[in-house]
Amino acid sequence: MISADWEPDEAGPAARAKVIACSLPEARQLLGDPFARDNAFAPAVARRLREAGAGAVCIVDVAGPDGRPLHWLDSEHARGWLAPATGTVRRSGDSRLFAKHLAAAMGRGFVAADAAVLATMATTSRRPATDPGAEEPEFVHDPALLPQLSWGEAAQFAETAAAAHRRLDLYAIVDSAERLLQVLAAGVRTVQLRIKTPPAPDAAWHAMLRREVQRSVGACEAAGAELFINDHWQLASDLRAHGVHLGQEDLLALGDAGRSALQATGLALGISSHSLWELCRARTLAPRYIACGPVWPTLTKAMPWRAQGLDNLSWWCHMARAPVVAIGGVLGAEQVLDAARCGADGVCIVRGLGEHPGRVVPALQAALEAGRAQAATAATPAAWPHPSLAFTD
Image 1 (cartoon, rainbow, N blue to C red):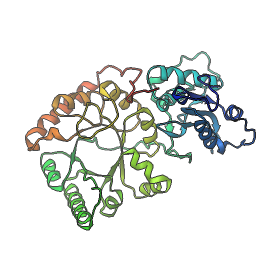
Image 2 (image 1 turned 180 degrees about the horizontal axis):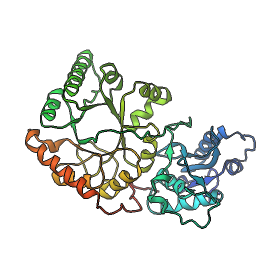
Image 3 (image 1 turned 90 degrees about the horizontal axis):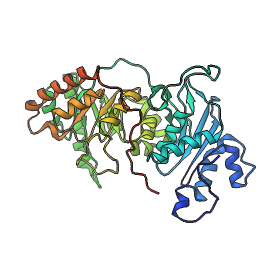
């Protein structure tokens, strides 16, 4: 029922680190509450267990709106419904089986949210139980088993459509329309305009932003390039940009209504991801691409994540079922080649473009093509990704 001995109101930091995996009836039993019987109460029950001292809670096998079993996750880093991949079935077993795999993943150093993703994969199968002689694939390396994670209490999941897109290739991140014109002239055809909002933006700043976006949209249309506006999705929609890139904190802040409004614009959506749970959550919005980062340590922004490295990038590319963009610490042709060899659909580069992009882009593009040629014969990614966030008790 649970992954460690635990009693409500147990004191001390060790108690807060305890993780519970149980069914909804078992959760009610722990709380001494026989009344909250409806499946919709799972988030509230998990919240009460967290308030009583649990570090993380996963209530397993709760019937979702369409009848398929879902797991409700409430942890320090993520909160939402984990939906086993479509076309899979639950393996026989009770909450103890899920708790066993959850504890095993945490033993590997994964935080509870990532461990719950791995436990969900471990307790699902592509084959029905009536096929006992079938050899099961290695679950952690099977993209058909990667679940989705909702953004909140609404069990909303969008399957990523199989669409024919051009490859994203070299992906330049720029901070002005002038810089954007330079990278277009150098031959780059995927660009992100990233102009961060100051603490107190005034009318002049907003007017500047609008001019920069409008100029960038026109330049990319003329060059046949894909333009993603960082953060400012309403303005991107108003000025008919191709797409928008958003981090997961920004997407969470939008709420269900805001995310629905964003999707209604028809903007192509790029989403950042740094962990297994963020990868699973990004997939629910049917994105144009999912960014995996930081692949290498980066000075562009401060963040708590460990570098993904080439092993995690390979795992992302193999598992995501969406184009993956490598981002973070890409400074030269060697790293572009390595990222492409892992299967990256696009490789983000910022400082590596230098002051004169036209001088460096040809070498970067050659490295990209060389890496892709080698990707066809590259080794299969390691079965287990490594944790990208430090586990603390």
